[in-house]
Length: 327
Ligand code: SF4
Ligand code: MG
Image 1 (cartoon, rainbow, N blue to C red):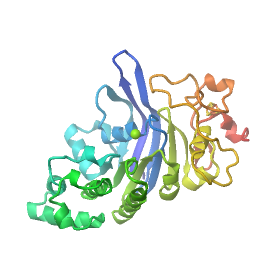
Image 2 (cartoon, rainbow, N blue to C red):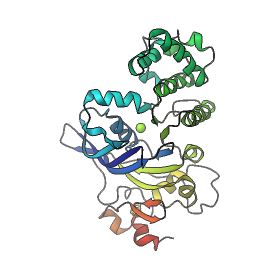
Image 3 (tube, rainbow, N blue to C red):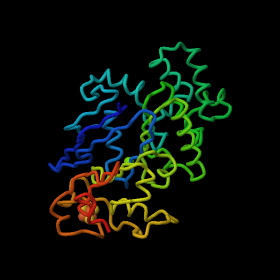
Image 4 (cartoon, helix red, strand yellow):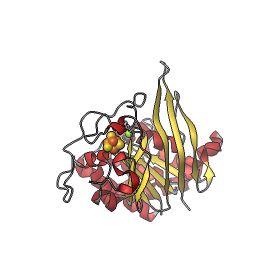
């Protein structure tokens, strides 16, 4: 049974001038216990809105207008605000690109972790303090006894992200959602943080939904990849399969920015243009305005996401009828 089941989710933003931004437009996917699933795409493709929808942290003028989100079979969209707050602490936690925005600058690190533990784990002050130090040790923060008395701005970006991970795992969630967790960090620190998340995933037996624009990260950490474009999933497969037999022109374009990818004879140099705004998708395939393989049909009909071989789903007219038109 899946841990998380997202079913035909639509999250739209109703703009002042009556335009509607279809940020997430009918996506369905599951995450199984213990799995690492990557959600990949350029910024503006709908990845973060997908994550925030799962957490129910969508603010006006955005709204989840359709679909279901099940966590262990429980429909999250039907929960009260209070029940959802509980879910956010205990079942699913999220870390963000810039930990500074998620940490409160006026409270010490220790304060923020103990607060969570007291609220969600019903610990007393001393228990919470002891546990906070343990957690900081677990995420590889040296001299944790001192760090609990420090403020977020006193730590480096990498250390702050470690603190965020400590807070996320403090309630032992079954699912950790990480939205570009290393994008704001130095390259040398990025790998350390990703390794730490992988360790924590294993140690706490969590599933990880890893949001990234970097397919390089994906190859090392994810079991399965979903590629998002224009608020929809355009390709989905186990990681090795997706990298070895990349199908969708957009995914090929994303890979074009990774040097030294053997076997891929058909890679694009880079994708031209930018992601169209979610209130102004082209008619037909949403990638048609940038796709080097665009055909007439593409500008008229948005293809369905279809299973073209075992475990491999693609949304592209090139692969209709089971991929017979494959190059
Ligand atoms: Fe390109 Fe057409 Fe496939 Fe869209 S459907 S990705 S425009 S070939
Ligand atoms: Mg984002």
